[in-house]
Image 1 (cartoon, rainbow, N blue to C red):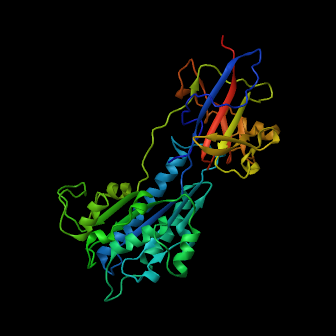
Image 2: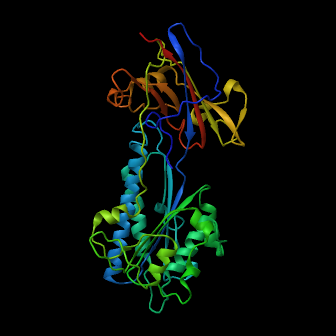
Image 3: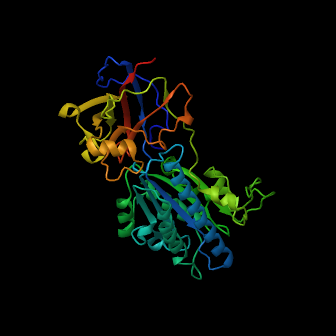
Length: 409
């Protein structure tokens, strides 16, 4: 799930039904592009980590924290990299919450969330690396805040099931703290789960009783398990399933467990990695038509799921000043026009990489860092449309672009 960031993600040429742009004498035709806007959905990362007061468990907690750091840095790379946008004037939003579920604590005190440690909520429009350190301070604090007390039963599998079902909405909250947690979580969220332990689960019942419901698992991107397993080689991945409850549970949730004694840093760095996507770059045979004032002959429409308004703060307005609704695949969407910047904002968008003070909207930019020719064949032209601020960020729906191109030689 990654946002559509022009120009780095190629669009399919389709008939979109947008209002046409004028075909001027010096232009050849209309260029019509369209594609689906997919927002990066909010995530809740659930960490169930051994809370034993031992040196081995302390080392494991530190490794899990480092895995979180590597994961969040990879998310930033995704938002700014090949499948994101390197444009500093474009929003790079995200919403990631961390929930630490302590496996030896009673249910009423098992969960630590951003309500207790605000840094466990990373809600941003900028996605800068320095933001990760604040989150990591919160994660480290949460993992070490309460260690297991003598006589407490160690139930990481039950704790994982309850926590995952709570954050996905598959389990009704019990008590004021759980109710407040569920209410605080964003809509449309997905979950990720990590269970890491130096010892086996002490649960008395069948392991299958602690497997999260199918509803919860269907909303979970991945489940990772690190436990006291044996491994035949340096990869840290287990091959032969043992007789521990953790290994049996891993098989039931289709996880590929690693040994908690793993010394390979790359394995830990990849444990919570968000993955990669293959993205391309748009090139076209003719340049877009831009007049002497820098105004490009393009109309940009977004068909969005939000039916309430076209958000002016995101550089959007109702086409022709009238609310307009369309239907795609049986779903009603609101059509919004993305405003082309004007005046000093247009000049800044066209020539300044940082575009200081620019409002949301779009332009045809000439900033070299954004339209480098090396990505295209010599006979082709790079895609110049630049979307500033939140013009296309965080929107679920479709984008439709109609432009006039310059006449060929």
